[in-house]
Image (cartoon, rainbow, N blue to C red; front, side, top):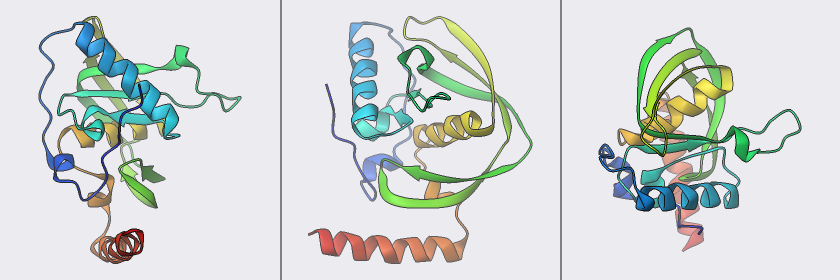
Length: 171
């Protein structure tokens, strides 16, 4: 089922998510709904807080070489923790909770993440390049932050001005 994606400046996006304690059918339904929502919104990642659920859950499904988001490549991460990061890369990022806005963000190039899958099995993964960006972007959501907070003061002010203008024309 497709859920509504909450957008900036919704205060829920500032919420620090809580760890999942129970791996059950309710969790599986949420993960399935998040997947449907992410595809519906043409995203490559989604954190549970973006569908108004303040739990440490994220999903990532990057397109493959054929530009297809293969469900076999889907990452479902519960209670993820970055245990190592190094290197630097700069990529243009966007966010389903900040629709229509893209900007360059500096992130670690290489990371190691530990997390649990939907059945509570511990996983450890290394990621680099765009996959590392996706992990870091989604994990920021879990701590109540958005990628726009990584922008320089000047870029952030420009964003706020454009965003307010956009909200006015929408209403």
